[in-house]
Length: 89
Ligand SMILES: [Zn+2]
Ligand SMILES: [Zn+2]
Ligand SMILES: [Zn+2]
Image (cartoon, rainbow, N blue to C red; front, side, top):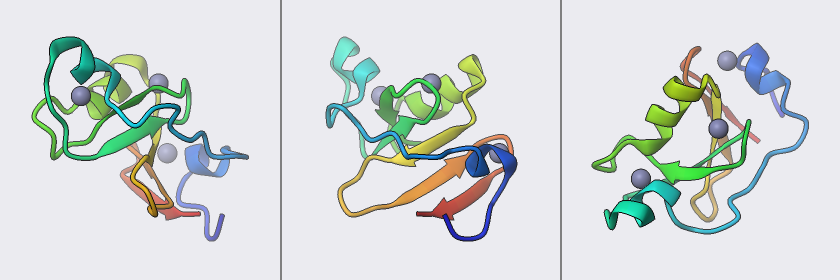
């Protein structure tokens, strides 16, 4: 990790990667997504804010799980919702 963006991102020793390349909530309701994000607290993979259902940010608010990683191939970054902090790794 380069410069620490916030305490939540700093606390992440190893980045949790997506187990499956799909939004778990969109699959349940038969919806579609744009990009995927993986929660760094519980490991769930959900859809981004450009997706119609915004499952990743809803999950972050509802569960108080602050940090997500991009689950898109070739993207290596983390984002913290409460601090609006961004870090590449
Ligand atoms: Zn933070
Ligand atoms: Zn979704
Ligand atoms: Zn979570």
